[in-house]
Image 1 (spheres, rainbow, N blue to C red):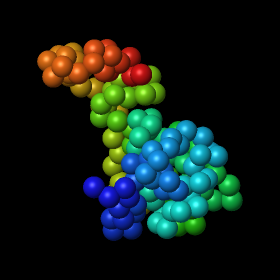
Image 2 (cartoon, rainbow, N blue to C red):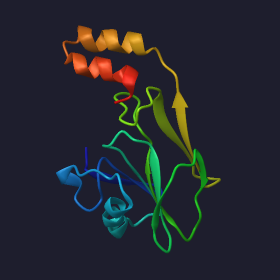
Image 3 (tube, rainbow, N blue to C red):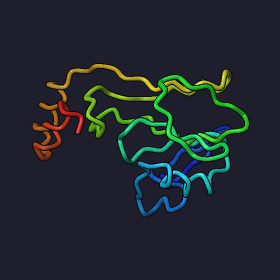
Length: 139
């Protein structure tokens, strides 16, 4: 897969836009500034941290915690949808994002799932036990 991909009017990247192959983390406004410098679309979705969040750039850069957000034309958005597995924000529920392109809306969603069944599959696959245990902790 490419390190970043433009789809319709938004961009997708696993880690950062400034150095996508170095797998950097974006946790702070300062971290987000570097990616915004290379962002050519109004919206970019990223991952890697497994922490759902939205960074907004207008006159400055700030982090939003809203679950529902309208995409405004004069702003740029760097959005992490979170993680279906292996969350890192203390919330065990699966996280994903819905982007309604026609209405310019983004929704960050959390859903419950069968953690015990997922833990059994991780153990059965021979993966490290820590990966199974952390599902219930969200860490």
